[in-house]
Picture 1 (cartoon, rainbow, N blue to C red):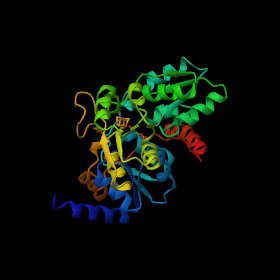
Picture 2: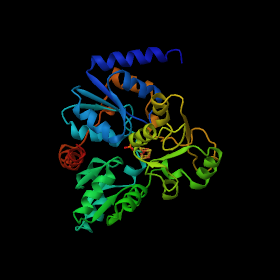
Picture 3: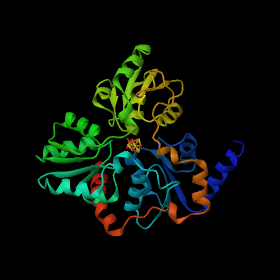
Picture 4: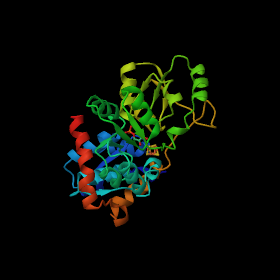
Length: 321
Ligand code: 13P
Ligand code: SF4
């Protein structure tokens, strides 16, 4: 532990020396979130991570998150070096959507516009018409629905169901879930609400419907933080990865944030939900990747797949403007 300040200083120095910017997700360790903010990088949701890495002038983008986030950065910035502390940081949604099966699913429904969540491989994105993140899925699907389009949606079934309920769009769903958010349970959440009757409930839409039904606000990670800032309650129950609470406490000092309970952990659990792949990002491997950029930490996307995958991502970024 006493060497932590030394590691942090060394990382700061190397980021400068290598003209590199650190782009982190809210679910990574608080130390890495702080480092990103203190060094001119960002900590944000998937949409903002993509935008930020794209707009930044640095020659190298270091992505502290999971692989699809690194791939998105590479697809948008093929000329830049994109590094990740651990390329084995997967996502259960990405893993549940192999390109061969997904392609067959698309081929079987040529009348549908293919909309995929950011949490997918570059190859899956290359097969899509649109890519969306949780912060913009609802708006893009509503836009397509208004044009009379039928949608093929993949991979997150809970987010898909939520967007379907809100927009009324005709959506054919792939069947996959986030292993972290799927564990939030309504029964335990109701028990926790009884213990904190004044608390407002904030829910990420990758959670099951019964949990979303108990929400005072539903949103992406950034959306959840903004909702709390708007609602100005004294107490919140947060149903997403607990990593986000670090940012919420920083931005809203004096406010109480309680983690929503997950299956089998009881109503008052601690460290209830944490993505095992986000947890692969640590100070030691972040330092190692900067000290000794190793090919095994560099994100590569096949150029032809990258060229095709860029189209649905840019469509989303253009729509989001
Ligand atoms: P956000 O875009 O809301 O940050 O979601 C990313 C993610 O992986 C949530 O589990
Ligand atoms: Fe994927 Fe869930 Fe982890 Fe997000 S929290 S990266 S959706 S497994």
